[in-house]
Length: 478
Image (cartoon, rainbow, N blue to C red; front, side):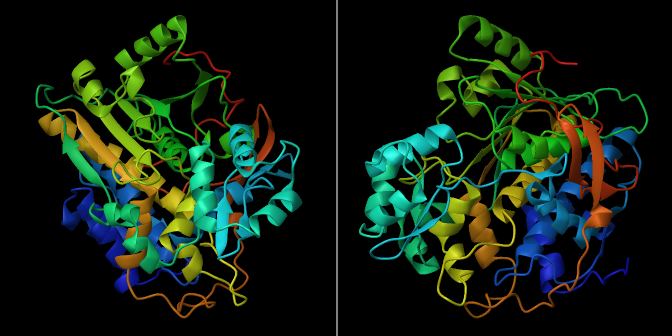
């Protein structure tokens, strides 16, 4: 692999900004070297800069934690653009006995409306049902029925009606329209991520003793994974890669799609618990009592009734590291709404900036808001563990996909290129992802999957275990 010079606005700016947001020592970024083919994840917006920088700070946070545990220097970190770009498309590269994973359902797409464009998300059965109910269509309706109906509707009217019914739909906006929207203004008031310490009554926490080979920085730590879809599961998949015991918990009435778990379930175990059930709640409380980290990825307030709001967790379990992720953020008129990467791209103006030559809204070449936020979230957990070992306290990190979108659009380098064109960097020709893919036997069949892009001296090259069937593991720590 040809070594690329670690200079240039896009090459380093994102890493430096993200590392500063994480509270890291700026001198440590000198431990990072960059390599790989140019022109990957080509887009009008600097999608590759986002991908490269988020993986870089995640790997650096892992190396820093390893040094904290060993008492030695921070290991060297390597960032390979080929590995990063392949990992950011992991759900597309996934094969199960040769079959491609299902990503978007037929009703998850763009629709032409009377005054513009609308994007809907209906991958989960309950979201599909709510969308069709809001549109006044029978549950047997298909794309043709929705297309005919939506052609005569105003996008903003449909957006509100679908959300009122518990579904997901977003009108396409320009960046200027998003900036003027109350939710866009709310997102703009916040940095890329926020970090805080909840109370000071928890003393410095010794990191668990590590055993086994290789010795991994997160070994011995227990992570309670309450996330769904891509961003949160990418974060916890990365923590599992680094040695943590990660237990994912889903509600049995809302199971995760198996194909999604096949991509993001590496290294984890997965169980189903109904927190509304007394016995399952008791089991969950036992898990929480022994957890070191809690990661949540539900809309703000959704888990509060179970005592899982950050301040409630701090009171119950001083010394926890808590990481929270949502689509739109905690405040603003959309603070309590559900959302996904594809919808955030549409609302914030990314889809307009990435539109095709025919004026059809476009998208980033990967679900980069999800993947990038996932690596940032994992980095924040790792940095909190390092700091907690020195100063104690209960640590909280908060993220929103809308904040990551703003960071991509305003902070990562040059202005976007002209509509309908790609990034001004060279586009990779004939890039072969095969060196960054592996095949692994699993309980679900032969998996072809992307290798992890997090790479540092002494770090792991692959996950310890493949994913199993979602929700079938015992609700116990190892």
